[in-house]
Length: 91
Image (cartoon, rainbow, N blue to C red; front, side):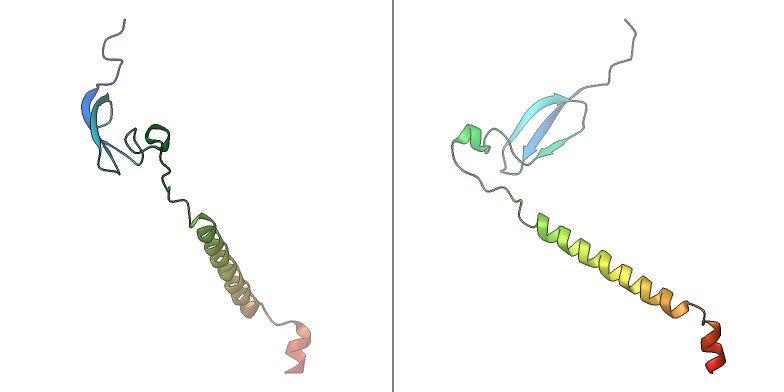
């Protein structure tokens, strides 16, 4: 077997958003998780609200911002457009 091929593993402390922490072996220096076995609904048997609200609202806001930027660019481009020959003769 080749020497020094595998990454170095460390004993680290995993911290959950609920406040629970436990030790494990990993190549990472530290680990933070949102859900663990102490607070996951499958293990606890209780319903837990996971924050998924706002995804659609954020998408719609991003879409509106893109539309405003596109409209501003079109307006700016229209103002910069050179005058046609008929417009120059009229002046």
